[in-house]
Length: 126
Image (cartoon, rainbow, N blue to C red; front, side, top):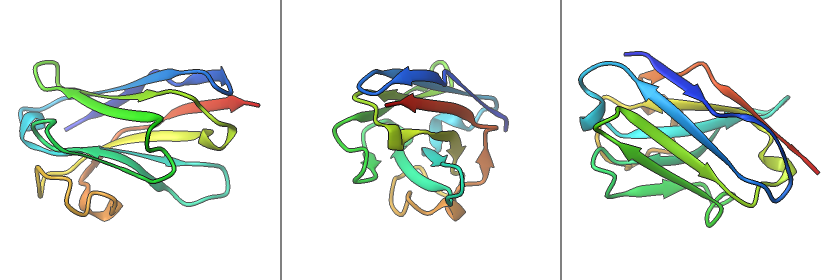
């Protein structure tokens, strides 16, 4: 399984970006997917997760109402729509795939993900 994240960039506070993560392999449609981020000098943190069907989602409190995770199983792609961006959203964003579960139960735990993308930089200027 390979994950390729893209769509990051530089945006002003209050602006929007859409991240995409394309996955290889035949198991994408049965596995939950997640987005994490890591800011300079900080630990990687959970952002959002989505179940295999897209029917369940789970968000970190800090992004609720501003970021939306979605997926297109026909395209093996998961998305992160980012609106009302803040300076504190600046980080490298990583997509990840779980193979132990298709649900979002405990999806905030990075150790439950088996595959990780290379990350895409998001910089929000204030």
